[in-house]
Length: 259
Image 1 (cartoon, rainbow, N blue to C red):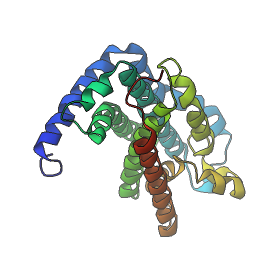
Image 2 (image 1 turned 120 degrees about the vertical axis):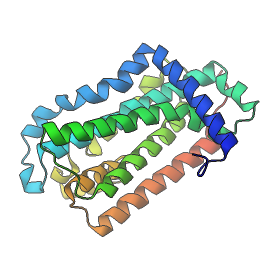
Image 3 (image 1 turned 180 degrees about the horizontal axis):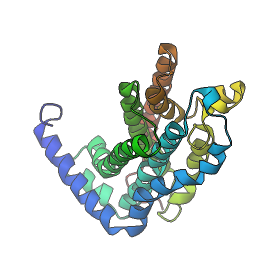
């Protein structure tokens, strides 16, 4: 850690992340959403996936279920849980108090996000091993692409959660403001239905959605079917969305309660 992050910054992030993890553990609703929903939801899309000719697209039930599970982890373990966390800490004046100390704005947002991002990363590892063993998904043919997609999805979901928090007045409304991105991503980003089986025009449009590149990289890393050009486009799209999200957070994120 000290080689990558200055020691004082690392200590501050660790302390903030530990406090946030404690609060997450006390919130049973958020804990269930983060831990159980991503594990249960993939089974809800299994009947629809079974009716698709996956072999014609070079896919298998294992790889499709794997990317669905990781996609749901992005959405629920990281994105929706962080929207609620950011709003709750803002409304409780926690963010305002933190800004009066040594922590910078980026440190506050990063430290708050670390527990959710860590949960999402751990889930992805468990799901990857589980699908490889139980659903015969096998090992990833281009593991570096899967890791790249996983990191891209986690970072982007954290940034998008902060953006959504700027539009959210209360913790109770957080599930409502997070819903549009969740639904659009589930349907169009290849989570519930692979983009490979969509009509070409629709697939090209869906590939521009925020989480589509991350899902494409995760699945492509497993199947080994992505070309260099497709990888480049996916990475460029992810970077563009991340830069846009970070700009929006820097410009509009609110540190005090919305009155």
